Image 1: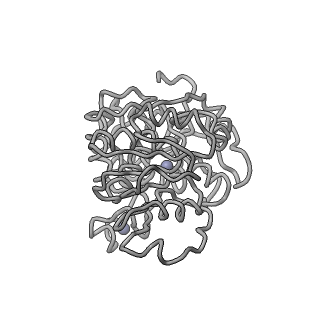
Image 2: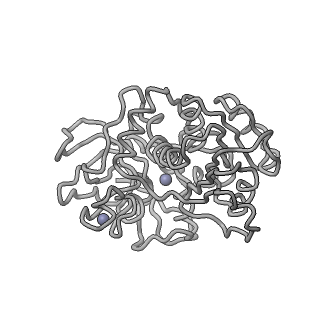
Image 3: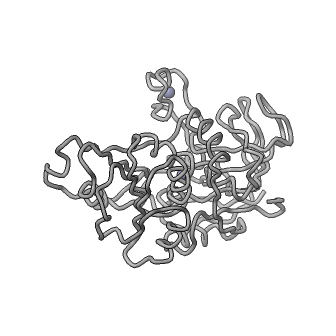
Length: 329
Ligand SMILES: [Zn+2]
Ligand SMILES: [Zn+2]
């Protein structure tokens, strides 16, 4: 099968012919129909997040069709494979409803070969049925951008005035969810990125502007999706008393030191790591009810490097999705 492989960090992915994966330990074999591209893939590519055992096939937002069934899924079923690929089920985090923090967790497209390929093997206990309302391409970004974005939104609390820093794949989904919950969304982009600010307004943001500009009123919560540490102090500076700033990415540049008064009055800064299967079930039930519409740009598998570089440069709006040759997506 064709696959785009990370051989070493700092180098582009390499188009490679690999044997079709052999499912083991109850895994299902999936024909990949589409696979979303995530900011985390850039961090893996750049070596900011470690890939323990390269070579590795990246891609952790897989929409696949079951070829060889096992467990809960029959052949032909359409399933989604997220970033959380396996947990031990026994550590103190797994046994307290926090499998996202499992000390032995294995992640799709980092520890387990992912979906930038024609086939992938996955543990069906960690796969989700894809809601019927979503075609393959539109479903793919739900599996990380949507799902971990949703976890970040939940952990931000119930505040009405919500800031979104970095309006990419995750924010364009979470904006729609937040508006449907009756929240008021304030979207921040790189300075001067007017097309993305217009996109945020189209999706229901009440205000959109440069991240260097103060919003018209203080915010109750902010989600930071851009991997830019100084945004933490920027966001804190416009957060009301008791508000929350959630860092929603897996990697961020250093956060500058800041005066205590930015944190004082019970403001909270926290991160969000990975997902639990419960997050997935909940979000995939919520998305069709909103309903969330995902805007996607399709790239053939062989152009995965272009998708990654276009993500880095902000050349598309919404999410990039990779489609292998012969996929019906
Ligand atoms: Zn991701
Ligand atoms: Zn565990």
